[in-house]
Structures are given as C-alpha cells and as structure tokens.
Length: 282
Image 1 (tube, rainbow, N blue to C red):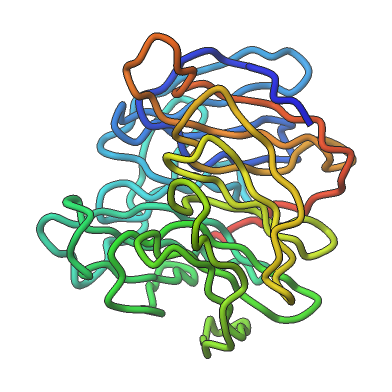
Image 2 (cartoon, one colour):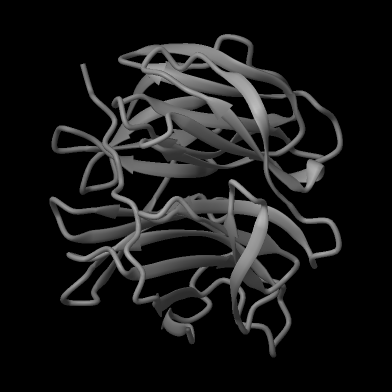
C-alpha cells in the first residue's frame, strides 16, 4: 500500500479527515492554520474556509451543515464558512482546547480536549447530544483518536502520552466502562494520534513522529500491517468512496524541505473501511 500525495504541503497541522457521502466530499482541518478544507472526490477541487479559532475536528450532520469543534465549543459551519455556536463546554479551562472528535453511531458528537502544553492531565472527553454536552472521561492530557466497533458495542480512545489504545463498553447514552487495552505502542516509533476502524474491526492508528499508520487487531493487540509515509507527523485517517477502500490521511508540517508533512495523502487499501457517522442536529 503506497501513499499518493493528493494535496502537497497544504497545512500546518492537518487533522480530522472526514468523508461526507451525501456531498461526496472529503473534509479536513488545519488546526494551527485556523481553517478547514473540502475536496470533491470526483473533481479533486479543494475549497478552503477560515475558521473563527483553532478548529480541531469536523463531522457531517443530518442537515445541510457540517459540525465542528473550535477552541472550547461545538459549532455548525456551512458551505460559505459561516459559524453558528451550538454550545460551549461548561468547565472550559485556560490553556486547554478541543482536539480530535467524531460523530458516534447514535448521532452524538464525541470530542476531547487537551493541554496546550501537552503535559498536564487537564483534558476531558465530551459527548454532545443535541445541544447538551456530557463529560465522559477526565484527567486526559491529549485526548486524541476515537473509533467504534458497532458489532461489539466497543469504543476505542487514545490519550496520546499513554501510548496505547484503550477499549470501553459503549451505549447510546455514551456511558463508558473500561474493558482493557486494544493496542500498545511499546517500542514502536512516535506516539498514537488519530485513528479509524475497518469493517473487520482492525484499528488503523496514525503515528505522530513515526511516519506511518499501524494496523492492529484489537482482540489480540497484535500489529498486523503498516503503511509508511514521506512525512514524520501522521495525524489521522478516514475511509472514503463508494466501497470505502480509499484511505485519506492527514499530516503536520515539520518545516523541513525533505519532509512532506502538511500534505493530504491517499492510500488505495483494497480493504473495506467503516462508514462515517452523522451528528444529529436538533
């Protein structure tokens, strides 16, 4: 599986790729650039919109908008880049911002926060149902990748400094009970960042500082495959397309001329991925 550069060095901190099957577009964000992009799958045309703050994730909705996490709040954004506040998290902390997030299988928007200094466990994981946010996990340092296995009722979550993927039981009320560790980085290079899950339940985890995506079988914790990239900071990935076999991958810039960080990559995996869920707007 060889990566193809779709958009070369377009971002400072590219993150959160999302597939919107209704519009047949890939969306992703540039957190430090305070902007987000959309790309038509057939045309390859990229449109870029400025955000009102550090936009850290973006998800499709059951309406005409996308939803996004910006700084300390959840917003609706439209095709012209306009922002409408849904709600801000109630215990917003100085030196903390939203990070990675996705819609869950029940139409909730699950997203976590992180310490801007990346050292203090002051972050939390939140679930937005309608316009009400629920705290799901606390004492996180860099809340990152999330994924769901709907067959098993399992939720996977990454707190990056722990260098592992934790597994939790999960339901429509977003109640969590930790059931174990799905993958550990141990001596693998870099640290776990964003992730996705394929139709067979394998986790595809991006390596920040490791230049790759590793594929794990969560029942055994075994690493079963990897994809290498010409960029050291790989941040996240999502499956897209009619058969969900195309993997779109985001990355972050290092400023080095020989590193392709900040590019959007495409990998034809030949493996069926998981669908992207929608946030239910009320």
